[in-house]
Image 1 (cartoon, rainbow over the protein chains, first blue to last red):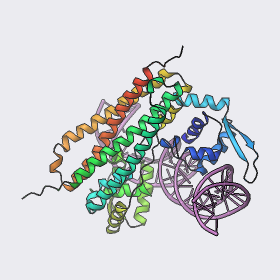
Image 2 (image 1 turned 30 degrees about the vertical axis):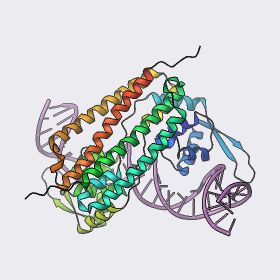
Image 3 (image 1 turned 45 degrees about the horizontal axis):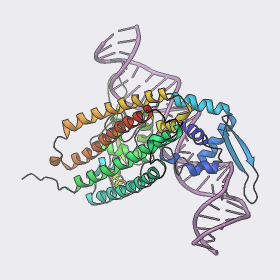
Length: 183
Length: 183
DNA sequence: TAACCCATGTAACCTGTTACATGATTAA
DNA sequence: TTAATCATGTAACAGGTTACATGGGTTA
């Protein structure tokens, strides 16, 4: 039942169409949740039935009409009470760790290459986040309430990528160390 | 299609029943993948049809017969070729971050309390992992090939929990700092 | 005597993924 | 003229969750 809430959260900033929401899931909100446009449209219909959002149709020429969704009073209340409920720790699902767990079944070189690829990918994301931090959050002490919360989530992303980079380096170093052979 | 592979990975150590596998998903393998017993039984039937595993029935008294599943030759090969394929970075799905992103909508005290709860939960997991490290991986330089790969995944878990603990502290400190009010 | 462990499963439902479908506008 | 952007959707399927069902053995 959570995608619904992520959509509500995204609509707290301003009214958005399904298309706009889908783009958000590739960017900012995309750091902590993923969804395809099909999921979003399906969920928006349900949210509208429930009266948590309402749609304002915007006629357009040469393209399908746009529907701008906004939070209703009910939707805002539902969102607030959801935020106040305790959250479980998120389950980890890491394909690359599953593979490494049984890594002894295959040659080691492609595994090291894969770790290097991940190292680079995480480093790139880290740079993106650092850029955002530099641009918008240079002085954390002076942030607005909204800004502070955004900053917290950015900090989580930053640390997460940094930590992966560090682990990749550790892992590559370990796998490149020759195994001790007993005489 | 990944739960299937996680099961195969878990079966590389020794033959297991569905029940055994379900328990593993609460422990070691559970760090990087989650599954309920229903998912596991469903998946095992499919894997048996595909001939990636085979079941040896073990008659028991006073309880249902146990089926011990082992990897077939085909299953092992399928597993090896899967391990060698590149993996995507795992999508992040963090309910608590979604909530914090819209945290300005609710009073701040319960949010800080929730962060403290998470801080403690992550610290507990960290302790568990550190205990395992101390017991089984005291000397990483002398590990067997299998051991090295296990150690890598443990290190990932360790760092992950450590990093969450650090972020929780950072987040609590930031939220406990009063917001600057302009005169 | 209540709760938990062992051991398996069915059924219904919800969530997420992939493919297909339409069609004008704009930039390379 | 090809691809990308804007803008919405349907349909089928795969994966994950929750509830229900059985039933003996063991520990508190």
